[in-house]
Length: 207
Image (cartoon, rainbow, N blue to C red; front, side, top):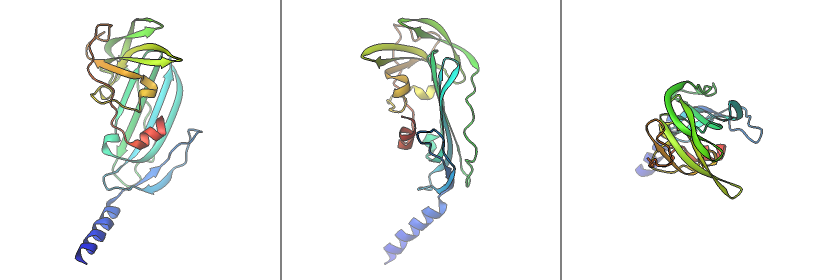
């Protein structure tokens, strides 16, 4: 009897400590309506997330969402191949219904670092990195059976030892990163694969 009482007490305590956050999960229209929802775990934070893709200088696609999230989902990063760019901003807070605002717009300011990027089969074009893009990246994608090389700039969070399913749609497979201006030349060595430490809900939203 004591054990049953203890288990029930723990469950009620966990529920009482869980945050209530706004949830807004976009459908095919990429829009949604805020709904207040109690998070499933006291470890959750409230999050507002924004994923934006760019074609050249123009915004191509934007997805905004709100939800309960783990601390590891609170990230900011981008990858820039010159011809296209992908940015994710996930901002978290820890008070009741605090994620009322959408995540902030990405801000692109050149940081002085330079990497190679590709135009067609030529990968010697200079790309000026922006914001926290402190690494050069090299990747490949398969387009209609033809393998193409991508080079550009990436944030540190995109460059770690474990692959991420999330960004493979935007970056491709076999990605590697390095530090130093123009280090992503043909002879540059890998510094690791892509990593974005996000929950399964990110995969449902953005892939």
